[in-house]
Image (cartoon, rainbow, N blue to C red; front, side, top):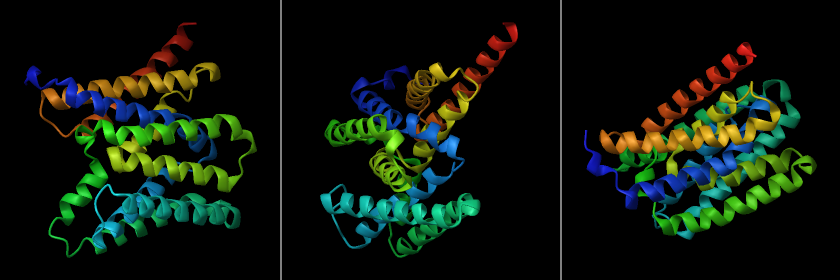
Length: 255
């Protein structure tokens, strides 16, 4: 245990990255849970990651504009495909989402098969490198997050399938390169699950508070005990989510 590792110069940008992910994923997560398409986030995130891997295989500069275009294009194509399948075969949409996830993940492994750093690159995309997030990375993501939230809260009722999936793809693409697939999925689903029994008027703020607390505890614990930040935050999201759900259930019983 080392309390000296609680360095705000490192943990500060990482926490802000987490808040940006939560900003878009909390409202989208509640919609995903309502629609019953829980694994869409994993599938779209994996497809976006496949775009990043493909760009890397072509020798494009990491974090460069070409890589971002590749990631967004892959995610949007995946979103369009999911829009079509939901319209064509709605009864098996969740199963198809799982198939697309497996196909994208397998394609990524194949593209990295001859890359000497392939294992490390794949680990970064899955578990993320949130502690390495810089303030320069946060600015464009902040702008995109504001635009996504403005469109979501302004046009939510007028969005069709294509609009929802497209907006979702943009949010996931921006998040997955900062925090990794596991944290993106956890930030989307766990807060939404935790507040599913809460009064409707308190669900959104409750989910934001749960997510924020989990990121604070997770980053602090990972720094103190020198553990992978992404994995610790995922467990903290689950723990805080369970505690919050238990608290609201007990409150209802006592009333």
